[in-house]
Length: 171
Image 1 (cartoon, rainbow, N blue to C red):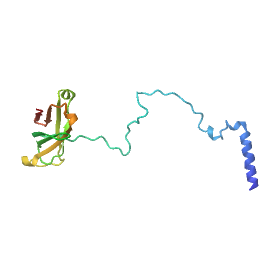
Image 2: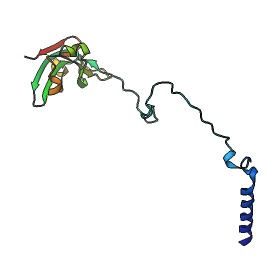
Image 3: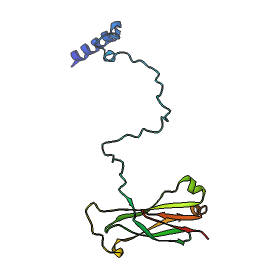
Image 4: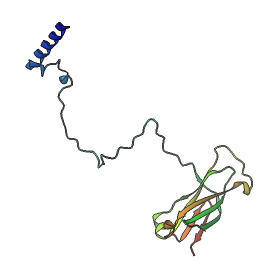
């Protein structure tokens, strides 16, 4: 045990005292060459604290909008609540089976300046063929809530379908 320890101690002292060790190919710190620093200008104005949006392995593709406007808007009413208003709309679909019924805001800046809230009455139809059926079986309803701070500047509410639109005004 004493001989290997002595040999190891002598070898390490010899290597440490050797001036050529720093530039030797045996030195692991010389294996990848000297590092250089270069200044790189950003290609565009970006904030380095916000990460770039990248697609990962588990990310989902952007959703596709499969909705279509309801064929006809048959009823529109607005009911006052303590927190604002609820806009109720009833529509007639072109065939049976619509789902994912919604009132989607589509107000343009010009309409907003005039105090108009425009909502598109949208549904999704099944991929398979469905019968037309009676009007009762094709009737769908949707609601949209607006709080009292948003309703302050609104004078007209418009619900838009494929063939018509219904409008109500504040009194």
